Image (spheres, rainbow, N blue to C red):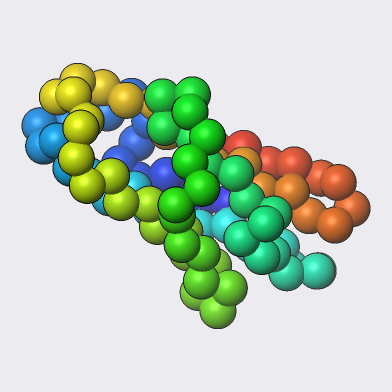
Length: 86
């Protein structure tokens, strides 16, 4: 899994932001259901995941304070292995 971008705890200047990450499993493949995404500790489900490119995208369209934010992505495979990136 590639860490989310912008980096976790990065200070942002805009109230809208798009976060991106990449998640993959070379053996079984992943689906959106295998991925959990958090912003400031709150589980977000309104992200997209493209299985062909392994890319996750989450767009926060409003309401972000102009400060640093914690972003975390977790992916689990069918064997129960979990990887997290911040």
